[in-house]
Image (cartoon, rainbow, N blue to C red; front, side):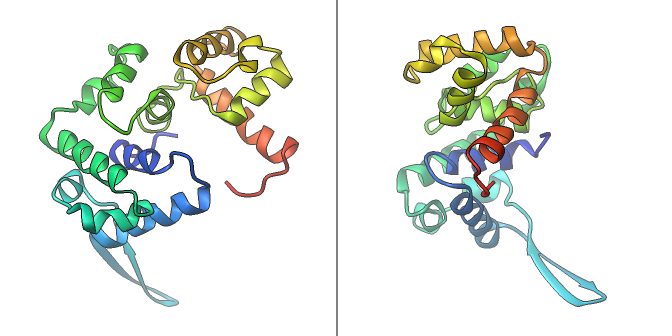
Length: 201
């Protein structure tokens, strides 16, 4: 929660349809290839790390250089470059999106104008990068616990836009609006760890 907004956007744009291990590897590759090198001395010797690249760094990236960092998905790489340029130029006004004066629907609609960002990714960006704890991302695991634990009937149906919104509305009624996303994320981890016995996060 409360992650750096630009890094959050890139991370979730990389995250579509792949596991956590590969997501971490992609983000590390992006940092190593485009980020600033940071060297430090510790009592155990020298340590080298890389800062996450700035919007300007990724906006000027070549697709051929970025594609290997997105599992060779050139479309995803191109979408990240375009989004980074919008961020760099101010066309994507992050301060406006982060403001409580901006409704969640308006925030999500603005993010979804960018290729590579759908409703679920927009909600993830809102929740993790913009401090919007009312954003409630829904994926397969969330659908499963919404049905098994709360018997939300819409969770038995597909993830169409209409049904996605219906599930969110019912979940907020149960979990409360202001912190639905925060609560939902804790339930997500509980479902994966305790019910599905999944170890990778």
